[in-house]
Image (cartoon, rainbow, N blue to C red; front, side):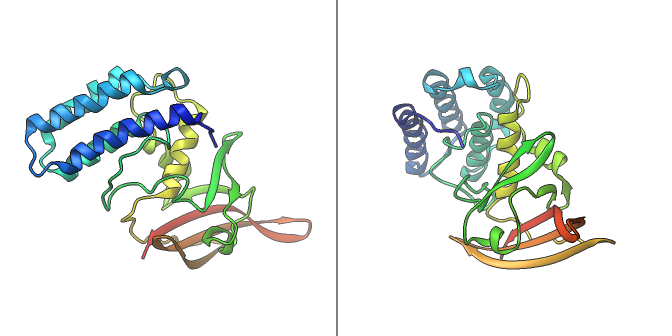
Length: 239
């Protein structure tokens, strides 16, 4: 995980939280208010976000992409969704709103009980939260994830990548992988149908504040005379 120097991190958090306090305090919303708040957040981050030199994000392109979408914003929920998409362009788990919707993504790392990253073109589990549902469901460090909620992992990650990148780097791909694994608060139940040589099992557990259903399809291969699950199709939903 990326360690952010304390002073810079506090500056980033203060910017985002200050903006959100303003949003939450409003009782009614007009197009002018939405536009003003959008411009305020964009310009404040432009002048204060500490890591643009580490990112492939084209911040001017972010404004070009998302500001026209204000025309379709009809409610506070629409506006929150739009701002979440803007912040996603930074692919930084330390920047988030202090409010969320049922459709909002779970926070990373608190919304995950496993950690994965790209290694030699493969999405590999590198850490498990001890005693939580992923470990108890039988996932192991070193297992490869091949699909998430029915989508090939490459496709799922490509859909989640920021849209303003000058180039797609490994940090952005790892951020998108973990965001897809964390899912959203209203993620619907899905299951997969195993074929020959595959096994499916389910595990229900609590990860505060959600009750999660994991559906895991594992492809087996023999290793040292034993049949071991090594390639995983994962479906995780809130129930």
